[in-house]
Image 1 (cartoon, rainbow, N blue to C red):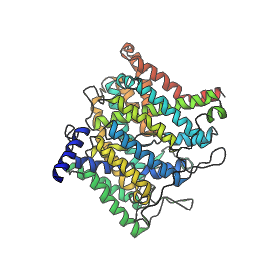
Image 2 (cartoon, rainbow, N blue to C red; image 1 turned 120 degrees about the horizontal axis):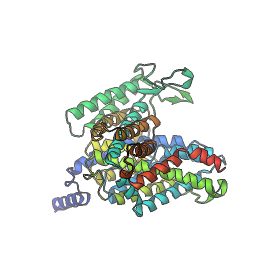
Image 3 (spheres, one colour; image 1 turned 120 degrees about the vertical axis):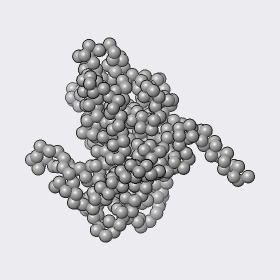
Image 4 (spheres, one colour; image 1 turned 90 degrees about the vertical axis):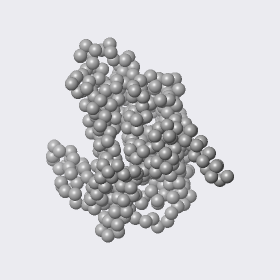
Length: 486
């Protein structure tokens, strides 16, 4: 009887998530969901550093422990919701770039309180959900030319590879005081001179070899093996953190220092969840200024998510012949709700994470992987030290390998036609160079419209592409516009 119930349960899961239909298995989805979690888990450490320590106009901070708990909660809730409703393996968490915009622009720059800033994030999410429900987001998605969709995918591949290289210390920024025209360098003074970066290099080699050998679960094995090496290296050489007592340590671990935790859990502090003021910003800085800030958030969120879903769908062979995700409207509505939930939880806007490509590369094809990833995020609220066992240097190799995989889509771009090649090229390079998916899409869209017109093909450009290009012109000029309106 038990065996019959087990078979029935597996059959129900298979039918609901379309596991067999998409060429996957329950075991693969579970394993890949774990891979996605470890590729994304750094956000539980990084988001608190961005949001938790910045004082608002009243001198209040959100707190590192509180933001960590809220970040894990929001990511868990939204990732599971996306998996159950949209049924795609795209993890959702606090978006990088948006969280910095909230802390630097809204709170430090515009002088908002944290509840007021998060109120604007919630309103941003409401606008995005309305645009998704109305079908506008889907219409824009389908108006994007195939060459630009491919360019977005390649650009995101380079973007996540850059994140991996920088977070692991393999590529480092040279301070302006160095007086050099080269903004980045290899390792420390051109050498791999730290144990964390050495561990990363070993991880890249290990993951690359496992992929070449087509080992099932190779990326998961790579993360596990590199983590063990990291723990051993730290135990022997005691590299420490990249910042210790406020002092920079170039040879330290970027975020989490690998090692067995002293404790395995505790009750999360969720005191900042629900601390939102929806109208305070309009009173403090004025209706026009607050509206322009919402516009900026909407445009960044709108295209960050759209570009990421395009890339992940193409990577997992989940798109149709025209490069569109089936049932995309449902996915876009749920993703838009991530901004509402993220703002309401004081964790900043939650959106589809490009790092989900790690799980997709390891075989994730359905929402079941998301249920696994989201469950681990929820567990991380109570088992906080556990995610700190895996340093970013152990997960970063997967991002570099996946970035290489996503480069394959560059063959879908016709580089023999410059009006197609130039916008695609700019889209690809702007994303990693500016650390922003939205920036790459914006520059690419503007240039595509201009180059097509110059080539005498303006009528072939969908009117929505012209509209979006115009909106991005406003987006890039938002600072002088804000100054002009006071």
